[in-house]
Length: 167
Image: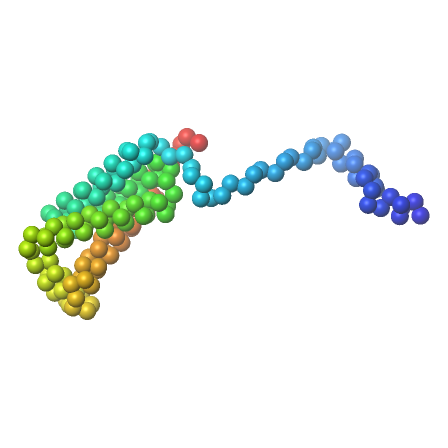
């Protein structure tokens, strides 16, 4: 009958002796930190913004010069810089994609503004690619290809880039 009286009470069944065997006090739980919380990045934001604008300008110059592979190269450099700077993958991919789309849009818009047959060329390219023969479809396909090139380059650059060594 005395066992029933001890049931559920502190010290019942000599469980208090576990502490003497090397098991210490329970520690307070670590507070939850959400994964979207802003981590510390290397370098000031102005330098990152300058890099974004410089990458866009290089892609625009490459597109105007006929170098269609420049979004991949800039994406590769963006991936390496994002890995070194401690940026998360979605941020790096978004930056690389924005640079490519804006960088290719600038020369297309500039040529159309100065009387070049950008719409007619885009329509012919879309028809040759087996897409609907519309200028908007050709331009969207061009921008999509540049975005995919930069995303592939950013992924590869992030994979090959150096890891951050400081905490």
